Length: 593
Picture (cartoon, rainbow, N blue to C red):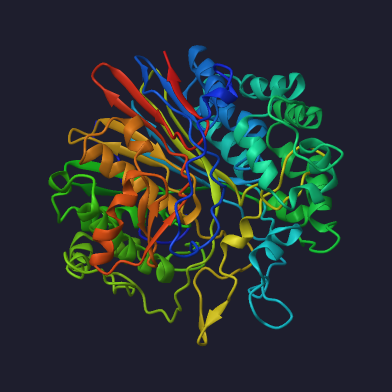
């Protein structure tokens, strides 16, 4: 059967083993930074954990916490599908990695159906309430609010989509009963789990979460200190919420007491209330979108289309790199130069053209057109950085008067799964910034701050910004759940990462490491992060990439040495089975049988 790889043009439509603190290596030394980073990292660096390459013969699950990955593997052992495993993983992550994702947020899912040889994508991105207006994040002086002032409170909360996405995926590709998939998280919420070194470290660094009474009682001691590593956390409120959802389905989240709790939490914030209504929750719908697919050498790479910019930007970067012999260059300053220049070009287009396709005609086919990308590649000099790239003029774009905007994007988690039938899921899931809006519901979960992924400025020089706030709109994302296929159309790799707008270079780096440099998935995900988001060239502190700095500065790069806290999960299919890599910058594992 021929593979189905459509390209959208425009329009709508952790504890498999106990995680011991002793496994946590000493935090990498923060190298002297030449300048401050572009924006704060979505989640702070908390050191590295030494990881070994995961191996399996029949199926594999990779997630950012061992307890979550184990829940997914157990579902696969019971004959569950890749989607079944991803659902169980997500709900456990809600507990053990609450800073990154949960049912109070949104997600993008890319699915491979081995029997049908087809890729499908589901958009569970949050939406702006109907009361939202373009000036939402402007202060009384007409200037953009400070990020933290916009985030903390109800103003930043979008209508969550994760739970409806999980239910929609289960209805199409699930095998085990829905309640069985929620059971691992229910048990964990009731019995409790121990606070890991990473969660403890992030709680210690967090300044605003403790101001929310429910979050303070759950995460902190009475004196305001974060509960220490090894403390058992129990969440009976979340267990009760999941029991209701197990019995009734996702509708129990979008109407009734849980929905009323969400709205009361959002609108009841004392200093920064939001305007979400019960009607906003009831109206939420998951969107199925056509995948964005493109060629890289002999490989076919598929991902999520708008409102995510991930697949388009990665395809553009790879299209530029395809004009070079990256295998010959190998890891080093020369390859990092080309990689960074490719990132500049992709982010320039992303800033101008990418937004919710229901509100803007996005020229997707033009942006990933091979001839267009090759014309952009001609702008790259082998000897000198271009500094700041300008947007291009892709084919198939309609006349538009828009202003470019970078926008602020932050953190997430990623799940990669392949089941015994060869079906696969790449799902990137988020509540946006670390600990989201810092609002915890009585129902036991944190709420997102996804609306701060919109541009704070509605216009620039009298021109509207594509990613401005509008009612019912989905904010632009960089999430890039990715599937890779070989020259014969066979599934080869399942990849993705958290990291806000840095997701794009994180995933692109991993693909180059896997496909050009032939690193195994563990070495590929752990390899130093680097690249440019059309600003300075960023290289990861405390890694071998620091050794490239002088050579890159000689080419005119403004280099910043910073913490780059990815959380990449990669699974690669081989004739013997599966190899998996879980990013050592986080606590995850890749496990299977």
